[in-house]
Image (tube, rainbow, N blue to C red):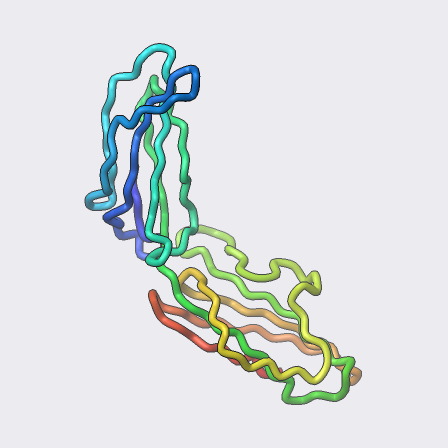
Amino acid sequence: MNVSNYVSGLPIEDITCAVYEQDALGNSTLLNQASTFDGVFEYNFLAKKNKSYFMTCSIDLEKYKMIQFFQYVDLDKYQMNEFNFELVKYASLNMNYYNSSCENGNDELRYRYYFKNPYGSGYIYIYSPYWDGELSKKGCISQIGVAYHQVPAGTYTIEWNVTRDSGYSEGSDTFFVGNGDSLTYLLEY
C-alpha cells in the first residue's frame, strides 16, 4: 500500500495499517500491524483455505484531512494487492460576505466554492456544487464572522451571481490556502 500527500505527491509516514485473517464465523486474528515507512506498508502472507483477509488503516485526523482513504479493504488472497491512498493536510477557511451596494431586501447572492484537483481533471466541491439556492444570501447582508471551517489545503475557486432590482451580475475569484494556514476571505458584492 502506498500513502502520499494529495497535493505534493510526497510519501506520508506514520499511517498505521493492519492485516487480519477472518474465519467463516467472522472471528478475526491480527496477522500484522505496522506504520508506513517512506509512504509504504508492505506485508506478505500465505493465504489459507476457508479464510478471508482484510486490511484497516488509521490516521491522525487532527493532522490530515481525508480526500480518499479506505478504512476497510477486502484483500484478494490469490493475487498481490496494491492500494494507493492520498491524504492532504488541513487548512482553515473563514468565508465572509458583505453587500456593499444594497438596493433593498430583494438583493440575492448565490455562490459556490470548490477545490481544484491538482492531479487530474475536475473539481472537488466543498460547498454547493449546483446553483440550488443552498448557499444564498438575501437582502442587505453583512456576514463577518470568526468561524473557521477545516478544508483541504490548496487552490480554491469561488463563483457567485447577484440579482438586484437593477440587474444581474456575476463574478469569480481564485485563492490559495496553504498547509496548516488560516485564511479569511471577504466576498464584497
